[in-house]
Image (cartoon, rainbow, N blue to C red):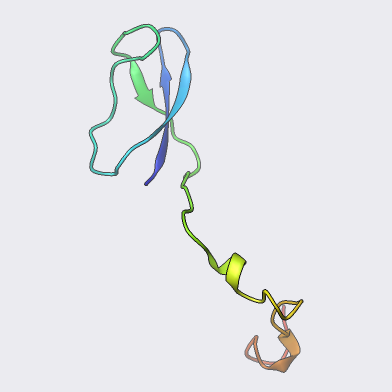
Length: 78
């Protein structure tokens, strides 16, 4: 679920809200109540849940993949 950042043009308060992509944009400022609460264009934010590749991959080998063993295609990493 994406995290959106909003800013109120009236009072200047800035907050992040966890919303579904299908949810309507928020318009009412939670601080001052005005209807000038707008999304701010920022880098994409997201939340990781559960176990990811960084937890399970290469856990017991002590190192990452070897680049010289054909893992990078031509035998060398650029």
